Image (cartoon, rainbow, N blue to C red):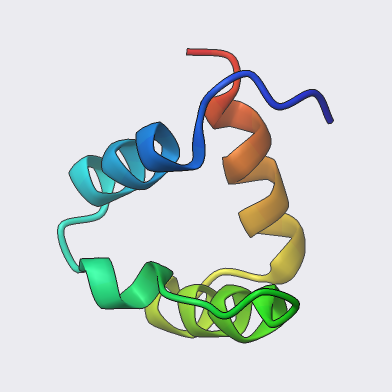
Length: 61
């Protein structure tokens, strides 16, 4: 996947799309991105594949 948008832009777009998300949901330590992805998956009730599709979709806007 080609990354076009900055992480900051992606967070803003996701927070607008899913009002349930907050800044703390996106916090992670380097090398521990998996924990954040699990937190997002749980909160949004989406599979890992659905999250990956969502992030890929953000690159097209």
